[in-house]
Image (cartoon, rainbow, N blue to C red; front, top):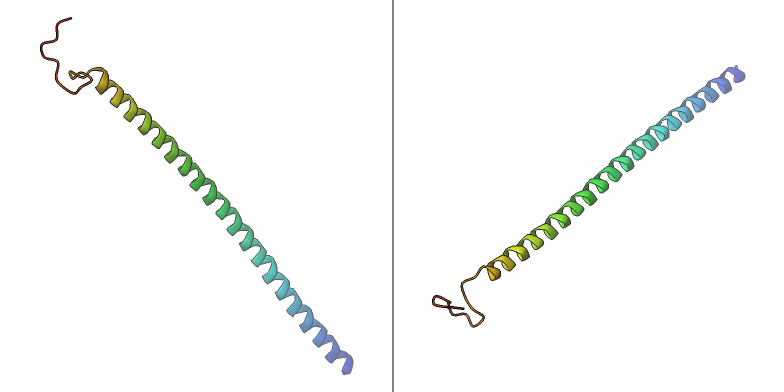
Length: 88
């Protein structure tokens, strides 16, 4: 009878250890999935930052081009007065 009780106790301990092992494996899988998702989010955010920086540089370049064209095609001389009757 003592042998049967010891066997039942050992089976219960084995079942408990199996359940704990399964929970640890599941937790590890969830953590790996979360880490992969975090890496994807980081890559997306970095790409968005690069895109925003490129757009900002393009906007700045376009603004400078427009300003240069304004100055180039302006009807005003360097003193700020309009050159209506300028004859070369």
